[in-house]
View 1 (cartoon, rainbow, N blue to C red):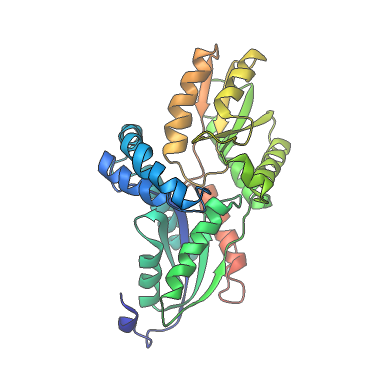
View 2: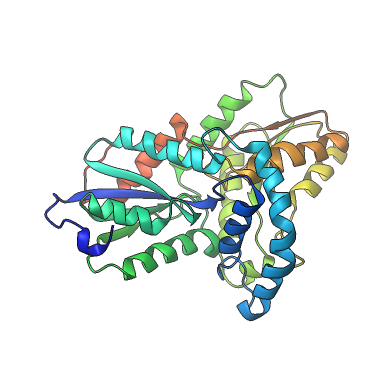
Length: 335
């Protein structure tokens, strides 16, 4: 809704906007190409001068990768859309129910739809004069949390009437987050027909240079694993997945780690992805299918991919507590 159409007479309300990474609108090459063009054009994501990067992106990358990625999306696409969109929407709906009618809970994607700008406008039209921006990334990175907030602030810059804004900080070491992870993992392990020898916590990879430039993502991920390892009665190993390009990336790499663990005697393993709030292509296809194939081909016997928190009861309780704290002074939320 254009700013001129916002009804300033609407009673003041408080909103919470959950933000996730993004997804193509459909599992076809055209939709994936459009999504990748937006995603990979973000200088927060690819930190190469655009004058150098754009010809590469528009040439080799966008002429070859969309078809391959579309095939991968087709293997995990759900009746309601992409897994990331489905689970993020379900999370927003469940959190709305948990937090009650005094708040407006909505969701948006940094890349693709629904856009951050469109949902901010919709919340403003519903009378939200105070909005908490909640990027659903436990660990902070410039390529995730920062770019989501960049996009939100860019949208706000175009508004004549702006809401008061707060932002959800990273929660990688929050006791409620670790407790939610443990409860979720324990519940899924109880449903397996085998006992894993170990857990592997796989995080989305980042170029190593981001660490050297001061990005805290690596150290926050390490801390999450340290706390999770202390909470579990299984050893927890750590790795990084989803590499792209020829730059040196954070180590150890997930598939290489699985190969090493088999050689060290780990025959049964469960993999978790605590850097992702909701299941998506990188968890369901990259880990649930491809990593499993590698582990079994190397001599592993049993492999289980454990789902993300998604919209589980553990997730909703966690978000209700995190959001409730950040809304202190705006609304009274106790869990």
